[in-house]
Structure formats: structure tokens, C-alpha cells
Length: 127
Length: 287
Image (tube, rainbow over all chains, first blue to last red; front, side, top):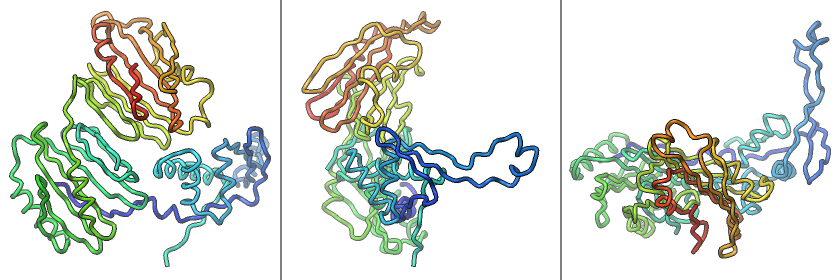
């Protein structure tokens, strides 16, 4: 017989109660096909301020993230009110996915958007 | 309840229990299923030489659980299943084992109960377990929404279970022959063109399409193609030139794209063309 299965709680539960919120300082432009382009401000790193590197390497003040239709749909729902679970259920209902298919797709996408500074995720600390 | 078949073990689980973990190994392996909140079931298998001494196994296991701090450890049984239940903090687990003579394996099923044990569901799941022998040299698998029949000598080589796409690849003769099955969601977001056009991109490299057809069956528009290995390799000269047959279609019921592919040699290509993929009731597509 196998050993203990360990903690049975799904490791995905903690993230599902968090609330993603759009980056308020980002500039947004509507794109064709119901998509949006999000321009996220960037801080110039210290080493980029020092010549001659600052003369050679151009610094872009904004970085563009062009979202596809799924990303745009998700981004619009990131209002700081809805939880990740609500986003998962919304995508699941719209595309006819199973719960875990939708969860993996949504959390993967949110991770990408967070890395690019398009959204931030507010987590709730356990009391 | 939804039927699952993995490594020829068939069983039925509640509709919202999904497979999240799996192993391909036929000798020792496991699958784990979860509902929305937590893992609910584990299925473990291990090949053994002859019938094991279950009584001794359970006694050993019982004492191990007690050492690990489990409380209320007791023997349980249901028909051919023998097992042990135990509680750790507020978590109750029940585990059953049984010897499967057909393939000389010890099968273990572990239930992880969130609150209270549901004996009716437990019995229903246990009673649904059966070994599915190959029928006409075809082995059936049901997992990740795929319901397929693969030729018996082919073994599961690779499973890609991504959030919205699943591909199961079976091979024989060290990958010389291949049978591949796919199921893809959110088609309206990424599919450009017809499933037939997409199918060409799904083929392995080195094949020249000879014939492409389209037909409609039970309101499913099925795109099929066949081709030949081009240019042939040295292996093709010795083992027979490889042929390819593939089909793809969108099921109008669940709006997903299904596809299957067969790479085989001239001698067995007709025999292996009996492999199939079912997307919904009454519709089975062969390559």
C-alpha cells in the first residue's frame, strides 16, 4: 500500500480567493477585434542612467502588452472586486471548460499578466 | 457519474472529479483525482508475482498508520476489497486494496474525505472498478475527455495535458509506428481556417500528403488525409515505408476540436486503421 497522501487540500485554493486588479497607472488603447493594448510604465534601472550605456541603449518609458481576446476578457474582469474563482467560473461557462481546465488556463494567464505589470494580485491574509 | 479508463482499469467517478496527476508506468503507478476544492481519490497499482498476502500487508499498513499518528485505525472491507480507515486530525481517509488477477497487479484505491465519509458513494465507486481486456486487439482509454481505442502493441508514450488541450501519444517499435489522439478547447480563439488545414500542421515532419477528403457524419464535418513518408529513410527500407492517416473535426456538441493520427507501415496500416476516437455518443471516427 502507498504512503500517506499528505495534505488533501488543493494547493490551488489559496490563489482562488485573491482579487486581481488592473494596473491603474497603465495606459490602455483599444485595438481591433475587441482586444486591448496595455502600456505599462517602466522605471529606468540605475545602470541605464550611466553613460555610455544610456547613450547606446535606448530606454522605453512604456512597455506594450497586446492582449488577445481571452486576455482582454480577463483583464476587463480584474476590477479588484472579483476573485480569481469568479474569473475561473466565468471563463469556464463561456468556453465550456471543466473547472480545472479553466483554473489552469486563468491562473496561468494571470501569472503572465502579473509578470508584465498589467495587473496586480491582492491576496487575503488568513486571520 | 463519469466513466474513466486508465491502463485498462475502468471505474466511474462523480462528474466534477478530474484527473490532475497521472503516471504512465504500467508496473508501478498512480492517478489522482480532485474536485474543485481538494484531492478526492488516488488510484495506485503495482505489478506483483502471484497473489499477495493481503492480511499481512494490511497489518503492516495498519501499524504504520498508527505510528504516523492516525487515530481510529480500523479494518474495513467491501466485497473483494480489503482495506483500512484512519483519521488524522480532522481528515478521514479510507483505503482499499485488491488483487487483479487478469494482469497480476495489486490495485489500491484511497478516498480522501473532506468532512464525512460517504459510504454509498464509496461502494458505488469500488463496485465500478473492473479490468478492461483488449477487444479485437484494441485497448480502450477514457481520460481528459478523450475516449479512444488504440492498437494493443502500442504503449502510452506521452501525455500532454495542458489547460485547454490534451494529446495522448502511443508508440510501437520504438516510435517507428505511432498513434496520436488530441482534444482541443477554445477553438474559436485560435483556429484559423478549417480543421483540415489545421490537421496538416499537426502532422509529424517528413510526410507528403497524397489525398485529402471531407465528409459529414451525424452533423460532424470530418476532414481526413493520408500520405507517405517522404523522403523514405533507411529504416523505411528495412521495416516498410511508413504511411500516415489522420482526421480532425469539431464536435458540434462540445465545440471542441478532435484529432487522431496513425503512422504505420504498409503491412499493418489497414489493421491499425481500426483505432478510433469518440467525441460524443454514437460518433467514432477512424483515421
